[in-house]
Image (tube, rainbow, N blue to C red):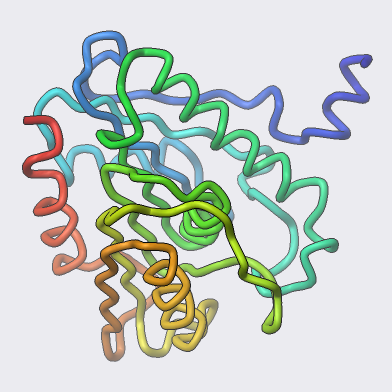
Length: 219
């Protein structure tokens, strides 16, 4: 396949992955951070300083054009292709890099904010297994109401945290609650917190909860 054909089929194929924390080859745990629409890997990577964990490598892939897919996350799935499939494949490549460095999924956290949270929750639902933790901040499963959710696999007790505003302008509360239900059905140990009158942001309570998830991960 020619390079321009590859870029058409996989819009994220040439995008970088930024890193912070311990070098991956020396790490005991890893966190993959997925940024939101209009933001960047560099933006989401600032969370590394807010979520310190001993021996942890932090990896943030960069979406092409600063967006994982072009249309709202509850639009018909086909309207966001080939970007959505390419974004899910990018997450898979980063996680394969982590496991290739000797860090198992059980010591790997998948975290996303906004559009990145939608991508994170959709990825782990489609690839359910035990992870170190899954964190979706202001996001939920991708696709319109009525999308089939018979995902294979088992999260096997993976700690899952979902946090969102009750009045988020982009993420309906009902979708966050539905996402929690689906991930519980897949075997996740889900905590969902809905915050009144919060903006489309990350708050201190969310950060504190995530620090608790990380506390024993790299021990």
